[in-house]
Length: 183
Image (cartoon, rainbow, N blue to C red; front, side, top):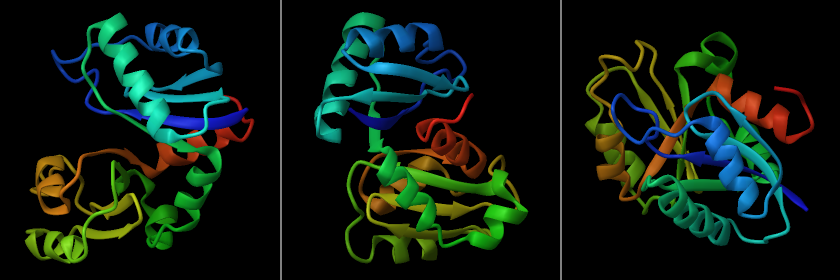
């Protein structure tokens, strides 16, 4: 059994894609996963599965969520080992310590094409900084995300792929849970 972390995209937004975490846990368990735990209301799930590939798990969970909960959304699945590698690859170690709430990791469906991250950085209108490694983008929002022009729509347009983002505090909590820690 491999431990996985799954992030749902765009659920529990005001008036959009409402999913209770109890229903989500039940759904993931009914899809055959074990030791299912959720974190926060934004769609973070840690579970164990014998299924090998993230793509297989994503497709399975996306289909089940649409059928059972009536919600069309995307799942982004990483193994616990991949998640630890995401943490280790963070290019913003100073910000991770001093301002973790404004450091964001965005999991992507695919690695951005060559030059896409540079194009995105050039499009930034504020003090935000973007870096990417593989299927993850790391973003700092030193002035906060609330008024930033660097929205998920802008990011996806420039990177050419879809994603979902979590702040560094949530990233670390998910890692702790995936590695046997408590909620």
